[in-house]
Picture 1 (tube, helix red, strand yellow):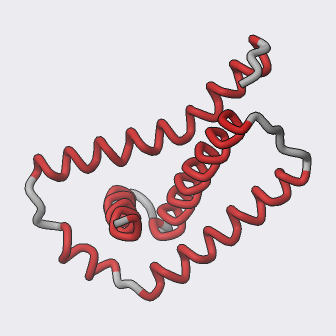
Picture 2: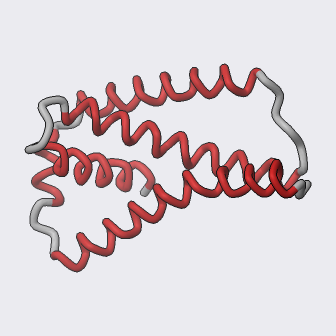
Length: 130
Protein backbone atom coordinates (compact mmCIF):
# COMPACT_ATOMS: atom_id res chain seq x y z
CA UNK A 1 0.00 0.00 0.00
CA UNK A 2 2.80 2.44 0.82
CA UNK A 3 4.68 1.64 -2.37
CA UNK A 4 1.47 1.97 -4.37
CA UNK A 5 0.84 5.39 -2.78
CA UNK A 6 4.41 6.40 -3.55
CA UNK A 7 4.00 5.27 -7.16
CA UNK A 8 0.76 7.25 -7.42
CA UNK A 9 2.44 10.35 -5.97
CA UNK A 10 5.32 9.93 -8.41
CA UNK A 11 2.91 9.65 -11.32
CA UNK A 12 0.84 12.70 -10.36
CA UNK A 13 3.83 14.93 -9.60
CA UNK A 14 5.60 13.83 -12.78
CA UNK A 15 2.44 14.42 -14.81
CA UNK A 16 2.20 17.94 -13.36
CA UNK A 17 5.79 18.81 -14.32
CA UNK A 18 5.83 16.85 -17.58
CA UNK A 19 4.83 19.74 -19.85
CA UNK A 20 6.34 22.53 -17.76
CA UNK A 21 9.86 21.31 -17.21
CA UNK A 22 12.64 19.58 -19.10
CA UNK A 23 13.93 17.86 -15.96
CA UNK A 24 10.56 16.62 -14.67
CA UNK A 25 12.02 13.33 -13.46
CA UNK A 26 14.66 14.96 -11.24
CA UNK A 27 12.17 17.48 -9.87
CA UNK A 28 9.67 14.72 -9.10
CA UNK A 29 12.29 12.68 -7.27
CA UNK A 30 13.38 15.75 -5.28
CA UNK A 31 9.79 16.47 -4.23
CA UNK A 32 9.23 12.84 -3.22
CA UNK A 33 12.47 12.91 -1.22
CA UNK A 34 11.31 15.99 0.69
CA UNK A 35 7.92 14.34 1.22
CA UNK A 36 9.48 11.15 2.64
CA UNK A 37 11.80 13.26 4.79
CA UNK A 38 8.79 15.19 6.08
CA UNK A 39 6.99 12.00 7.04
CA UNK A 40 10.12 10.66 8.76
CA UNK A 41 10.64 13.97 10.57
CA UNK A 42 7.02 14.04 11.71
CA UNK A 43 7.30 10.48 12.99
CA UNK A 44 10.52 11.35 14.82
CA UNK A 45 8.93 14.49 16.27
CA UNK A 46 5.94 12.55 17.57
CA UNK A 47 8.28 9.95 19.12
CA UNK A 48 10.34 12.67 20.82
CA UNK A 49 7.17 14.29 22.18
CA UNK A 50 5.79 11.00 23.51
CA UNK A 51 9.04 9.72 25.04
CA UNK A 52 10.37 13.20 26.00
CA UNK A 53 13.93 13.07 24.75
CA UNK A 54 16.08 15.46 22.75
CA UNK A 55 18.27 14.76 19.74
CA UNK A 56 21.94 15.67 19.69
CA UNK A 57 23.88 17.47 16.94
CA UNK A 58 24.75 14.31 14.96
CA UNK A 59 21.09 14.26 13.99
CA UNK A 60 21.86 16.87 11.30
CA UNK A 61 24.47 14.64 9.67
CA UNK A 62 22.09 11.68 9.71
CA UNK A 63 19.42 13.86 8.11
CA UNK A 64 21.63 14.67 5.14
CA UNK A 65 22.65 11.04 4.75
CA UNK A 66 19.01 9.94 4.98
CA UNK A 67 17.91 12.38 2.27
CA UNK A 68 20.72 11.39 -0.12
CA UNK A 69 20.08 7.67 0.38
CA UNK A 70 16.32 8.21 -0.07
CA UNK A 71 16.90 10.13 -3.29
CA UNK A 72 19.19 7.42 -4.65
CA UNK A 73 16.75 4.63 -3.75
CA UNK A 74 13.89 6.51 -5.41
CA UNK A 75 16.01 7.12 -8.48
CA UNK A 76 16.86 3.43 -8.69
CA UNK A 77 13.20 2.41 -8.29
CA UNK A 78 11.82 4.80 -10.89
CA UNK A 79 14.55 4.09 -13.39
CA UNK A 80 13.37 0.47 -13.37
CA UNK A 81 9.64 1.25 -13.49
CA UNK A 82 8.47 2.82 -16.70
CA UNK A 83 6.49 6.04 -16.46
CA UNK A 84 4.31 4.69 -19.26
CA UNK A 85 3.33 1.71 -17.09
CA UNK A 86 2.25 4.05 -14.32
CA UNK A 87 0.45 6.19 -16.88
CA UNK A 88 -1.51 3.19 -18.17
CA UNK A 89 -2.44 2.26 -14.63
CA UNK A 90 -3.80 5.65 -13.52
CA UNK A 91 -4.47 7.79 -16.56
CA UNK A 92 -8.14 6.91 -16.96
CA UNK A 93 -9.22 6.99 -13.34
CA UNK A 94 -12.47 8.87 -12.58
CA UNK A 95 -12.11 12.54 -11.77
CA UNK A 96 -13.71 12.23 -8.32
CA UNK A 97 -11.17 9.53 -7.37
CA UNK A 98 -8.36 11.64 -8.79
CA UNK A 99 -9.53 14.66 -6.76
CA UNK A 100 -9.89 12.65 -3.56
CA UNK A 101 -6.44 11.05 -3.89
CA UNK A 102 -4.93 14.42 -4.80
CA UNK A 103 -6.38 16.09 -1.71
CA UNK A 104 -5.14 13.26 0.50
CA UNK A 105 -1.68 13.47 -1.07
CA UNK A 106 -1.40 17.25 -0.63
CA UNK A 107 -2.83 17.15 2.91
CA UNK A 108 -0.32 14.48 3.89
CA UNK A 109 2.56 16.49 2.44
CA UNK A 110 1.52 19.71 4.15
CA UNK A 111 0.80 18.01 7.48
CA UNK A 112 4.07 16.12 7.47
CA UNK A 113 6.00 19.35 7.02
CA UNK A 114 4.04 21.51 9.47
CA UNK A 115 3.83 19.24 12.53
CA UNK A 116 7.60 19.49 13.28
CA UNK A 117 7.47 23.24 12.70
CA UNK A 118 4.53 23.70 15.08
CA UNK A 119 6.15 21.52 17.76
CA UNK A 120 9.40 23.50 17.39
CA UNK A 121 7.57 26.82 17.77
CA UNK A 122 5.73 25.57 20.85
CA UNK A 123 8.94 24.23 22.41
CA UNK A 124 11.28 27.13 21.78
CA UNK A 125 9.02 30.18 21.73
CA UNK A 126 6.51 29.23 24.41
CA UNK A 127 8.73 27.02 26.54
CA UNK A 128 6.46 24.02 26.45
CA UNK A 129 8.33 20.86 27.33
CA UNK A 130 6.46 18.03 25.68
